[in-house]
Image 1: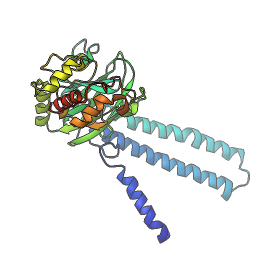
Image 2: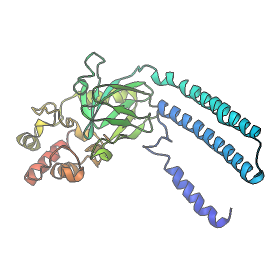
Image 3: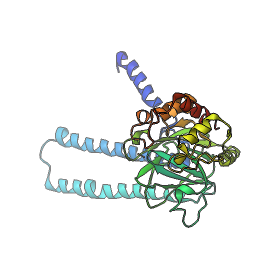
Amino acid sequence: MSRRLARPLAVLSLAVLAGCQGPQSVFDPAGMEAERVLGLFWVMLAGAVAIWLVVMGISVYATKAHPEAHSEKSGLRLILWGGVAFPVVVLTALLVFGLQMMPAFRAPADGPRIAVSGERFWWRVHYDTPDQPGVAKALSMVGTPSANEVWLPVGRRSEILLGSPDVIHSFWVPNIAGKTDTIPGRINRLVVEPTREGIYNGICAEFCGTAHAQMGFRVRVVSEADYAAKVAAEAAPAAVLDHPGREAFERNGCGACHQVRGTPSAGLVGPDLTHLAARQTLGAGILPVTPDNIARFVALTEHEKPGVQMPAFAMLPEAEIAAMAQWLGALK
Ligand code: CUA
């Protein structure tokens, strides 16, 4: 290769490889399921490349090296071996290789059970969800409520129950496991075993409506002790109760859709806001949680997140919005 080409190519391949690392990449697994899926991918890719090379070789042989007519017998032999025997052997081997992975995916969870419901367009999360009859119907109502962030203990097999009240979404954390749909009327079960602590990005991987591309979430893999502390903290009532922002929140009817535990606001339409400021993002992965961003989201909701079901409240006095944003921004 000429030296003129070598440098740009090296830079390009570094850039491409760098894209394989990070908090939202199947090539940087941090979960047992993602590791296995990646292994399967490499095996299939290697097989596909090998077969492609053989087919190309045969094409070149037949058109360039020996372009003269071949006998009917050799043609038949090629079809029999290359078109029947070879695919049967290769596809059977791949099937067996894929199937023998499945028992590990189906291993029972010994860790927490977390319910996640795909909403338009955010994620309803409940910790400590009991596995009882009726959970399927009331997925969104059992356990400790939270939203748009899923904490998981490292090294434990946790079960995530997935549902949806209206449209199909797909729950996908590329570093942790393969994607699983959330389907109205049924509960899908995803068992995950995170292997590395860290913060990972999750996305909705099924087109579900206008704000589909703005339906993200965070997965935070932490030690078992930190996980237990987090669930206990989520179960606690709001940290700040005496605040002018709380009065503004209640006066303007925000509690009809949002719940802030420890106050009369008990709406279940939108995300639970009891510990909003303990989350990394606002609006399902679209903005960092700061008072300024909260005020912006309240006033310019549709502008910040087209397709969102919450109406914008730009008609409220700025001071009221600022007070609410200060209060919500303090709810750790
Ligand atoms: Cu939810 Cu796409």
